Length: 433
Image 1 (cartoon, rainbow, N blue to C red):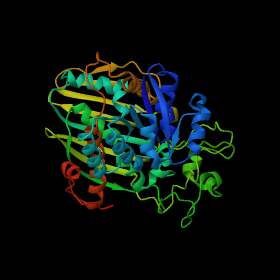
Image 2 (cartoon, rainbow, N blue to C red):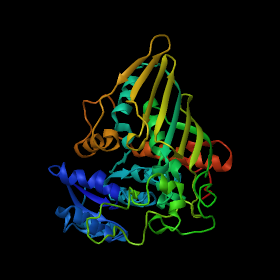
Image 3 (cartoon, rainbow, N blue to C red):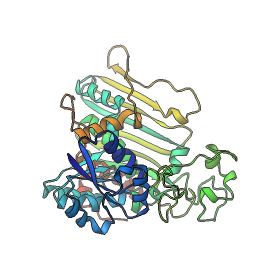
Image 4 (spheres, one colour):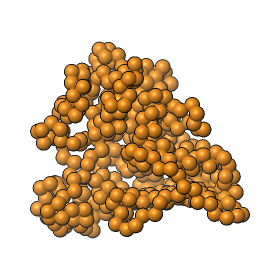
């Protein structure tokens, strides 16, 4: 029986880790401690999972006491992004294994802290980058391992976030760089990790442009400029807010769920957390991150990534092409639950350099994130599948490269110059935060 301590009793912690441990893997796993900065989160968790009532609970300054008193084998880190580094390093200093939600940390300096702590520890870090585990992404990796397109030369990846999902980041703590690292880290680490995993190479350098086009006080669709501190739930001008009315009406409001600090109302109190509202106005001036990026990233072996991401679009999905000396792989996906037009089945299209196109239909997975989460959870709680053709468990080093790439992107956009990833991970680039 392996034992776990949960650091950050967030919505993501509950749905991604606590729920499967309690319901599916209870014969192999047991939660022995909960740690969070907000005591109300303990009530939310134990009300949803009565079997955890009586589990020892701790505040962040009692981390050492938690380890000494409950002796967990593994520490799961799933609080807001800026809290990750401290928990990971402390766990490693106690020689504990760590499972951390993405992004591993929010800065390259914290990447260095984690890598240094891991180098002196008996513990190891696994980053829960679940995009590696969707059936489509797995099939693409298998085709690349089979050398279907030869030596990889370039990747085109354009990611689209719709106005519901995109706006949600700007209503929550994610909108502040010191808490999330910005969206080139909080969100794009998924994408940078995928590319590194697919091509089997680490990033070398990034050059990017980025800006705040849609949100913040100068947002073109701000219904009342110069007014700060509104919240969607009590806003008096929300009927004039195009972002709100795109997904709601005067008689029906669609709530935005916070991945880290909200959960279904199970306590009967109507409160999920203390002194925090995940519906702040998307036009507030405290927003200090970008909502649009276009970047070129160079990888080992002179593989080039052309990347863009936009957080305010009419639909959600992505388009991918991987080019090689013998052909090309393409796929595109629409987030069907919020798309208002017919959505085609996602396929993987293979174009040999000389020959006919082949469309490959991939059996879809069930469960969250297009079937990725259940497979990732099996690997986390039962161990990797030895029959699989490749390793999908992201390490601390891989997590660090995905974070440093995201930092290189926002730094390049701010400073107007290419940024080398190795310089960030070695501490050769001064902080501008």
